[in-house]
Length: 132
Image 1 (cartoon, helix red, strand yellow):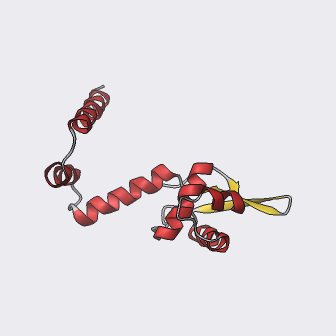
Image 2 (tube, rainbow, N blue to C red):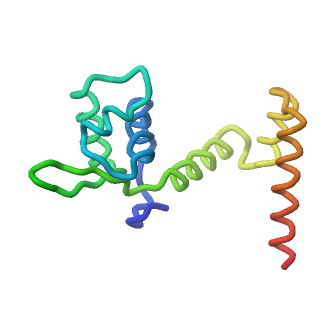
């Protein structure tokens, strides 16, 4: 699941995810750069440092020391984390059925025609891949 093969990384808290989004956006960065990239409302710099340390302990972020400062980088890709979170959501709330997930959004949340057309195109492309 992750670049380093760590399959057992845990879920992120809201605060951790906010910092992790900044790390994913930057690709790599020093704590000050990460703090600056965090979306509003921005937490205090020390809070960002604390979250980075927690993310390191959880196996989401690694660092290299350059000129006495730590440069942080993701160990888990955004795509891997997103996929795992989506799978957990489908498993926990939709009985493991992606059909039920899509049905929920179509019936209860309303999907625009443009979104349906885009989904139909994606499905058709996947069908072609599977058939070849």
